[in-house]
Image (cartoon, rainbow, N blue to C red; front, side, top):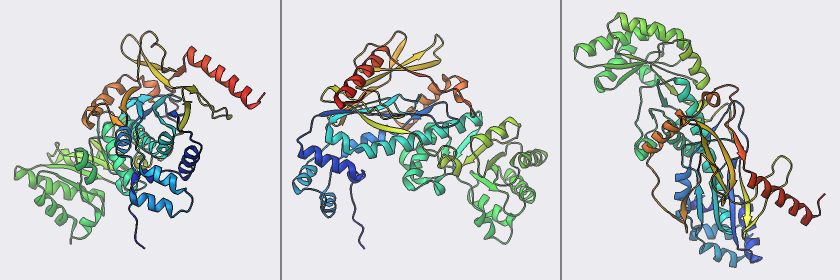
Length: 455
């Protein structure tokens, strides 16, 4: 069966389109504001890192239902032909305010607000949540790994076990933003200018008559970037073969970069590797470890003093194994200038367009955020985080490059207190609500209950 190529505009839940048709038929096309926020922090998370804004803005600027999209929607036999003609002409013409990518945030704090005609703002919900969620999830996880590594090199090896190719690309970008040295994934490496890293697979070693011959062939092919995977058969024997190759390279004024440990007791094997390399006069050769690592195992290795210079992380980071989802939401907070809110138990929303005010102490250390109304003055000693990044469906400026985002995150993360960075049982980064927003919430709650006949 021929696969129909549809545009990103169709990456939306069906109810977004059925609501859109009901809006259209009711001539309810006023301006709406939606807030995107993370409601709660997962276990062992004291903060999250907002990311994904670049992909969101790319999507909104290019938003359009193509002829193929309209045909596909028509084939569902759900939608009015007049509504489909309306969709064919639809473009995103709204405003977006957002916190900069790489901003450290706490729960209940909006990271993005969309103000646009309600149909436009409604249809884009699914894509916006998807992108902000996956990028923020992975950037947060990666930042914890970098923190655990305490300055040692960390590389993304996760492409083959992420949930799809898009997630693998998001992981490479997110992890580099959070401080990884690079990725093994060529596509995002080339696309974003992320440094690429790679060693060899066990299959390469197994294809040669002996491990030593495999090592020699690789070293002769890549004399300036050789890392030898030493655990195909026996790690200690692999290390002996690596020493032979390393000494031969040294005689040729070349350098063996590293040996890679990928299984077993990594801490003990690293000590053995370091001893063997040093005794052979190969103190410059690094020890690199991989194999089921995450922030918890890396923290244990670093804390034990294991002589490991760098880590390759894959599965557990690529799927954020200990916290595979964040509780994110995209809620209507105003319609035609009227603040609205949801009253559902456990899922109440705060009404009205908002601003987030960041507090710092006298030394510049992050001290918490205050969520207020968009039109209130910034409290003393705070700065607003939500910035206008799109007007009339177009960027107001080009956002920073990935290297600039990486540096900005590094500087901000350094100002986050250690109690929020703790890998286990951290103190959540504090977020409070301004007096003005509390008063607005109380008023809208009372008005909503009265209007709906609720006690």
